[in-house]
Length: 431
Ligand code: GDP
Ligand code: IMO
Ligand code: MG
Image (cartoon, rainbow, N blue to C red; front, top):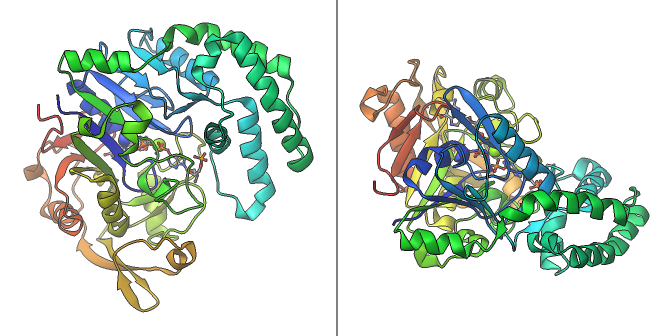
């Protein structure tokens, strides 16, 4: 029963969803452990596309259990919409397929309003959040005034908590942010209506863990966002409000560190970023445009154009240390096909000195210049390759360089969005 944790090594959108969907074949339980509906994990199976914001990306495999951990902040409206969309696509969701941790915090309408109004107030200094209320919800959790899924099952307690919170939130919204206040009765009615549908799913996740341990099954922990969006380790303050690093699988799901056996880092073959913040290898030229178009780099949650640049291996190296990566999955390698020369960033030049870690100071990071190694490109279509031997020699050179610079072995290479468009070198579950 080797359990695997999937994490993003860059600034999100590395293709975590595709890899989680693929690996679910050998897992019995898939658990999301942080983030919320700011995530957009795209799965392409049988030519059909599905986007998961909250439901784990293992949901397309019938018979596999999915769970939303206590570390996730859950917008009930998004969750119900996602369940309905899957239902329409013939994927029936019931409590045998999905559990929502009773300890997960709930996104309230005022969280979204505060998120959006704050961003508007910041103007050009905005973080570029997804506007999904993520930061304000985690603030309430840490401030010990949050609403949890279990509160949805206790209407009187739920009402009292919302009433107390609204006094503070409405004051802040109206008098500081210049936004509209919320009405208690409207929120209570709307949330208790959604609670009726969600109640059967709200449970103690340790029941699922107990069953899997007893059956000696495999657990797949699904991270959202990426290491450099981590509130502690990322490019603060241009980060999200949770910890996407692997260690969070313990606190965000409710298991001990000895239950995490393989940490798999997902690395997009180039770098993208949505939202603001410094980006050392960003390409504001025709090559960046080529990657953006060919990689269809539009946000799965907000539809925003993703900023694109060369592969930053300083960032991936940091991620290897911060997550304790056992292996890497390289995704979207096919997108680089057709470029004459490829560049990988192997160091940062800061004030005339070459460094190989991202400085914590945002000012210093903003002054870092990329130190590149040039590699030859390839022209052949690689999307049909199912083993390394079928890849052009230049493609293998590119992969070898990633392994060499990061010191982490590759286990998966993805050459297309489809589940089958993958080269598996070593199954993290050892199956
Ligand atoms: P996530 O948030 O990490 O799950 O990543 P997203 O789903 O937001 O973004 C990755 C995008 O790339 C999705 O549209 C995927 O369908 C797509 N994708 C994943 N792997 C590959 C690949 O190897 N090649 C191509 N061309 N697309 C891929
Ligand atoms: P997945 O799981 C890429 C970014 C936002 C913004 C910053 C803060 O699909 O990889 P937030 O709404 O979280 O307060 O926004 O974080 N961001 C993501 N970028 N992929 C994501 O998720 C992201 N989730 C948040 O764009 O810059
Ligand atoms: Mg995404």
